[in-house]
Amino acid sequence: MAVLTKSVCWRGCGLLGSAALFLGLSGCAGLWDEITSNNRDLKGYFFKPDPLQVIRESNDGAKRGDALSSLREPLQNGGTQKDQDAYINILTAAATVDREPLCRLGAIHALSAFKDPRAAQVLEEAYTRRLSFGPELNGIIRQQTLEAIGKIGNPDSRHLLIRVARQPSGAVDASLIDQQQTQDERLTAIRALSRYKQADAIETLVYIMETERDLAYKDRTVESLRIATGKNLPPDPKAWRDLMAGGGNVAPEPNFIQRVVGNGKQ
Image (cartoon, rainbow, N blue to C red; front, side):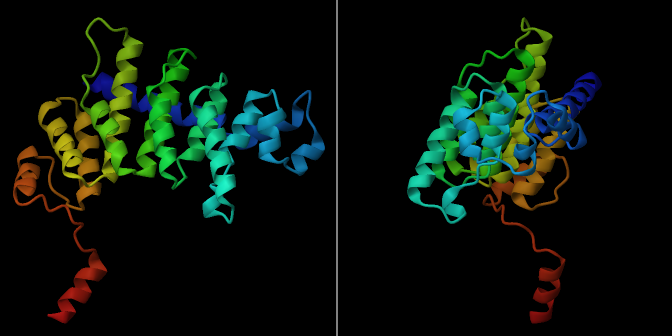
């Protein structure tokens, strides 16, 4: 069990580092690469080009991925419905069929901030698509997609997260890489479920707490339950079952200020 937990932590750090690199968030290293690139355009460095132009014209996967990740939802930023539809179409193609993994990651990153219901649907399609970038990249893309789905918090998307969270940790005859990726995806889905207060999402988290022996799953499940319900119950499945049996009350508990104000009114 300890091996799994340590492996998950190591891969989690690697995932964050890879995502930061892919999305152009690597700080000085990215700056140095950009300045010293053989085909650099200093004017383009000081005056960033239109991301739509880069997406249409560039053959550089890293630049296109960065441009895709920078797209902001038009209707939330003064744009028109026509702009909204165009952006959704661009990001849909990039997230689901683009041959460059950096472009898929860039589109997934952008979609995670969209409020348009179509964004969640695109991300679900991106997750279920068969990937062919190699085990490591495939795993990163799938985990980032699950994380983006959870960030949006679309109620209908919880069904995918529930399915991923409940799946077995890996077939006995599967490779170690495949088993580890399945475990990582489950942990990502469990964390994403913290944004859902529906009964079936809570039930799934309690079920995992009851059935899993590995501490990595138990710890993350308890954390998600506390966030989703606002209840600071112990890591005891019976306590959470009792909460659900008492009418499924998952309303957040009042914070300190609310308790003080409430006491003053009594």
